[in-house]
Image (tube, rainbow, N blue to C red; front, side, top):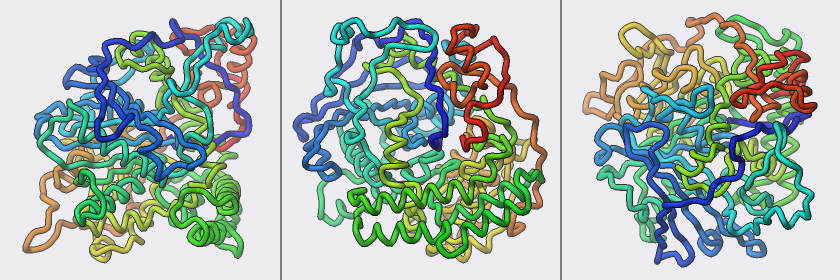
Length: 601
C-alpha cells in the first residue's frame, strides 16, 4: 500500500496469544559456494491453501555481494524473506511471477493473503479459506520482502533492560523486529531494484525447489510497486543484455511481463490528473469545489509550481546523482520538497472531504481491505509454519520515511522511460486500475500510457476501449490494448483491485500472461502476418459511469489503529476500557472522527 506519514499517528498494537516468535525449527539451510557468506534457508509450508506446494524462507546476502549499492563506510548484510507457492495447474511448465508489495515498506505477505494470493484470512485472524481467484492458478508465484537479518542486529534479551520492560497488555506487545537502522535499508527504487536483482540471481539459480521448465519471469507490483516494479523490470532487462553481451556474468531472467495494479509510476505524468479525479470522475461525485479544482491545477502548472519542482529535482539529480543512489544531500532535499508541495497543493484538497484515499466510496477511517493478516501472521503457529525469527509488521515506517524524507523517491523516480524501454524490448506491460482509487488514480496512468513513446505508440493511441468480459454474465471494466500494452479500468474497485474485484483481476492477469486479449481472452496478441491485435471502440471511457456504494462500517483493528479506528476507540484502547475480540474493538462503537482528522491517509 502506498503509505504516507500522517500528521498524528497513535501507535497502539493488539495483544497476541504469543507475541515473541518461537525458535524456528525444521529449517533447511543451503550454503551458496559461489558467494561466500550467502545461503538460503527455507522450509515447506502447508498454510494458506493446500492446492499447491509452498515454501517460505530467506536468502541471506553478505555485504560483499551487495557492495555496488552500499556505502563503503557502512556495509551491512541483508536477508530477503520469500514465500514461494507453485502454480495450481502444471507447475513444472508454468511461468513464474515475482510479486512486489507497495508502501514503500509494505510486507510481501499481502500478496499471499490479499492481492490475488492463494488464501483469504477470515475475521478471527486465525483461519483461512482458499481463494478461487488466486494468481497462482497458472503461474508460480514468488513473494518477497526485505528484512535486515535479525541475527546481525545484536538482539538484547529482556534481562539486559534491568527490569524496565513493561508487561504486555492490549496496547503494548513484546516483539522481535528486524534492525531499525535507517542506514541499513534501501532508500529509493533504484537501490531496491539492484538488491532485488541480486536476490533473484541467487534464488533462481540456487533454490532447490524451483523446478519449472518454463523460464519466463514476470514482475507484478501493487501501489508503490508501480515505481519499483517498473524500475526493477527495466533493470532486470538491462542486466540481461549485459549478460548476453558477455559484459557481466549471471543468469538471464527472461522477462515476459510487467504487471502493475493501481500503482504510481511517474508523477510527472500522473499528478495533474488528481484534481480531475476529485472533481469530475466517472461516479459523478465532486469531492472538491470548482475553485479548489482550478487552484489545484494552477498549483501544478504555474511557474515554480508542482511540475517545475519535479523537473528541477530530476535535473539536479541527473547532474549530481546520475546513478540515482540518493548520495547527494541537495538533490534529496529538493526532491523531498517537490514531493511535499505536490501532495499538499495539488493533491491535498481532496482530504477535506473525509474520504479514504484508497477508496473514494469509503469515509475515513476505511476498514477495507480488512487488516486480518497482522493478527494471523503474528500467531505462534503461523510463525512456526513459516520458520520466521521476527514478528510480522504490515508496513515498515523506517522504509517509508527513508523513501519519503531520505530521497524524495516519489518524484525523483522517472518511471516513464522504463515503461517505454520495456515495451520496445518486447516485454508486455499490463496496467490494471480500480476506478475508485485516489491514491494512484486511473486517470493519470491512462494518460501515461497514451503519452508513452515506443514502437507501437501510435497504434495504441488509435485503439479504443472495449468491455472486459469476465464471465458469461459480468463485465468487469474496459480496456485499451495494442500488442503488449494494455490499460484496464476496473469498475467498482479501490486501491487493492484484487480485493474488490478478484475475478476481474484474475482474468486480466491470466489473459495477459497467456498472450490473449484482455477483453475476452479469445484472441492471440502475438504479432501476426496480417497485423497486431488491437481493441476498437470509444477513445475515452467516460461513457461508462457507475454509482458509488455506501461507506463500509468502521472496523477498528488493534494492529492498524491509526487507519481503522476512531478517536473514541483509540482513547478506549489507551485507557484500558476497550473490549477486544480477535484483535477487533467491539466496544466502544465508532465516534469522535478519524484519528488523522482530514489527513491524507
